[in-house]
Length: 379
Image 1 (cartoon, rainbow, N blue to C red):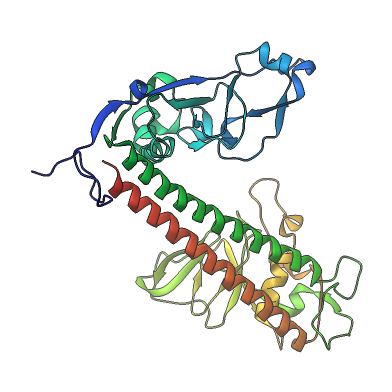
Image 2 (cartoon, rainbow, N blue to C red):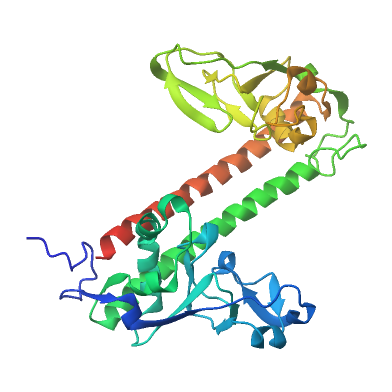
């Protein structure tokens, strides 16, 4: 019979069964409180005030005074303490504090009593998150409590060295994931910066940044002069196939017929109207997603970058669910360069988008790798 107290994957130098303990037996824990919001003397001080959404942050938005701390149930934590979110949308989230500061009542601070490894306990709590939420927060509603967390049964190695090695392994994985996330964020910010500089500002006829050799003013026109706006249609009469169907949220399923043999730009007719998509033919779009094809010699990749620059919500025609019409899209005032400059700009942003997509894929692979190791390296 399989021994359920040995993990599937283990560092080779360790043997023996893991033991089961109540989390409350091996740790001490406490939650904090919030100084009276109406008292201005309690805020604007020098003590970082950590809230549940900030348990993994290196800084806080709020700071409290010594009076605020002393006249409330707020409690201090130090860097390295385990912080567990009890309330609201972040319930079940866990992190290692990067801040020496005070916590509110929505956070449970957890400190090992007998030298158990904080990173090991943190990763175990991350692994258990969905089980804890499904068991104690039916439908995702309600709050967790300190007593619930203390009563959780944790399996852990008898040897502290094994805990430390597992904790360090996952710490390194988390640092890799955080690094990739930061690189991805930087790339997206870089793209937004280039979108601002490589298209003319309102009231101007040339962009701030250009490729060498281009000096002409950009031509003023309407979007309908360079793009044909086409309507999507219902797909439910179609059969399963290999033609992708796109909605405002992206790919949905594949069918046996197509609406277009030409690459296009998808833009929402209703619902999500500010998320342009580059659609590779052949494809089908649902009736809430327009697809725009290029006219004459205009470059599709340039037009897609232009679509990412447009403030689509400005042209929302509804008072309820956001909506665009063909007429409103056609009338949008834009400026465009020559086809040759369009091609340069379009390819530049295509390379940026491909780099962003690669980083997104690498990040998802790292997250999936971590999830797999969590399942196999814990009991």
